[in-house]
Image (cartoon, rainbow, N blue to C red; front, side):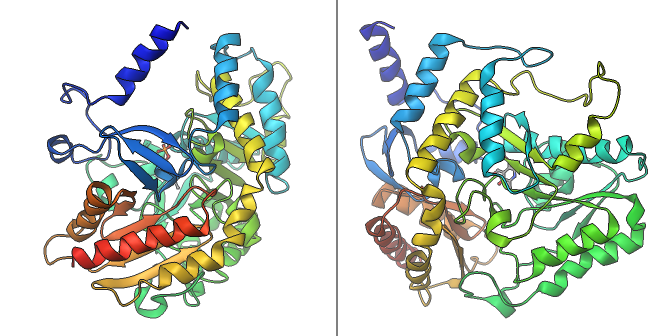
Length: 451
Ligand SMILES: Cc1ncc(COP(=O)(O)O)c(C=O)c1O
């Protein structure tokens, strides 16, 4: 590309647009946003730069995406090289080298025995793919009556019809009709009364796993295909599993022949101190969904890890038959694969999967120093995840945290994420102690000012 084309596109991407009406923004208050936009123009390391030229500390890793920080040269080089070499190639009855290479690399960091990888383009697609694999698996092995899927209240599994059906966030469900049939939900595990201000995993609530037994017996366990949970929920405002809870879910699934799916779209790729939360918690599911950190957020891509047993079950039919009637035009897209391979290189070179353990204690100490500030009713943390829950203003759920969010962004150059009245933090894993001090110093001020 010539210098002037570079300049042209750089200029377009970093300036305030003249018109903002046509873009219908996702999960956003469009009219409110467009009156006072928050526009990011560039990013490097721990920082964004806004279109008005301010350097903004990223407390969110973009949106739980950029675990290796922003603007990583290796990823840029890999994607630039790939687009020059080959822009697109199909993976239906065709192939190119990268998705095979990448799957081997991914299998090497995934927990045993989840050694097969199906590619998608997002977390939502990963979830729908995992649900479909679970249903088809039972059907292929002659248990086609297993059609029920169990999710959990407060769960977020993206926005496909499968994902919102098993998800447990009322606003994401209520507008969209009857959703998938045969879905039931376990109770969520947030219990501020008993577990408020826990450091790390909460003590109380293992008994909530028995909800699975209750639901299984209600429907007959032999009708249930799968249970899907986030090991740690993010979108609901960071809900942690009580000690022993995930282990108990695993036991019950094994007992009843139910597949256990961990949705690791936010917990994958080092967020909690191992490649996957499954490894940190020592609980192995049958399927893992991921996205986001897979390419460090740089090119859309998701994936589903399937156990050898699940994968091999599909490989028993006639050799010329397509084993799974599922896939996306962009499954294994060359640019996404190139980005993911380079991302894995960065994670490995910088030992980033260990950062959440190395810095976890400091993170925990600093976030809990916010206890006692006005309206703070709970603080939760695990790995490099943090949540500060504020009491809601009467009749205005979310308003107080939204004010903290806008104050941080416009006045204090810090990007945080809020959901309801919970401030959720998931910084890039390259952060250092001084960034932690700055994040919580600014937040403390903003929480006080918006009291
Ligand atoms: C646990 C979980 N699952 C699925 C998704 C959906 O991912 P996407 O927005 O890429 O479709 C998200 C997104 O935040 C998530 O946190």
